[in-house]
Image: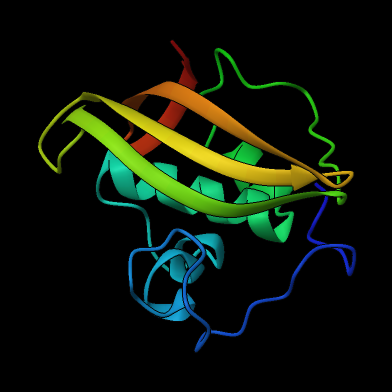
Length: 136
């Protein structure tokens, strides 16, 4: 599986987390990307997946994608820079739920242009772990 390359930003554990939780990367999404913990909620999985897009970690994205909708491979564009994540709403997706929905807006820059991705993501818990299913 691909791993982050030098074409993407490198974050130290003491850097502010790109998901804008207010926590340091190592205490927030970094631990999920490193594989030392599993995201306990659908929202935290969504935030960690956003952070994976920021740092170009396609292996993490594929590993947290539900097998029924996961692509065979994922190539990320290093020219696409994600810089802001705003949570719009969440439904279910807590530690005791089986499914969840997280709506968010993510802002990016690409080739000098600014853009925004507005998505309503669905998640399910499979074998005790949250998995991204699809955008609704």
